[in-house]
Image (cartoon, rainbow, N blue to C red):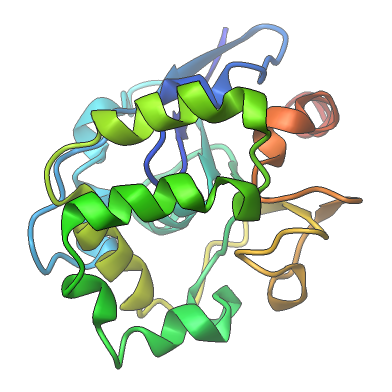
Length: 214
């Protein structure tokens, strides 16, 4: 049976992949290591490696921030293929407002409790529907101390300018966080938001089947 190691998006856990199903494939969702202060995204990606069995063929799958980590891992490890959903492959694919925060580190002055409150307030902006609110907040509250501050710091200071060519990128053209115009996607989900792994899972599953079976 094929194995996919999956990393969820910022502030979420294995529940983000509840509707992702690929025939004859085991989806193993990795747990978040606690991010130390001032760690780079490249260094943080390496903390996930102990959770991956490299003695057998495998694929990598990442959503949003999890996809950025997978992009870095694909340069270190040897996955069969790396698939990103609603993500960015390198720094140049981040929107300008995120890159701006690398020069004005406002996020480091904001208390962790406020980061979590803003995550709740931003549900609509990301595209999560109201009936998903309870589960969304449950995932956010599960994150370790200083998780949001340090992970956001990883993103805005991301320096990588290249990426592995085995990456398959799936993106929604209605993504309001990681803008569609900033990325080079292999597959476009029309009307797909940043939360499309939840509300457009059937279309994503079809693409995954095609990529893994093709």
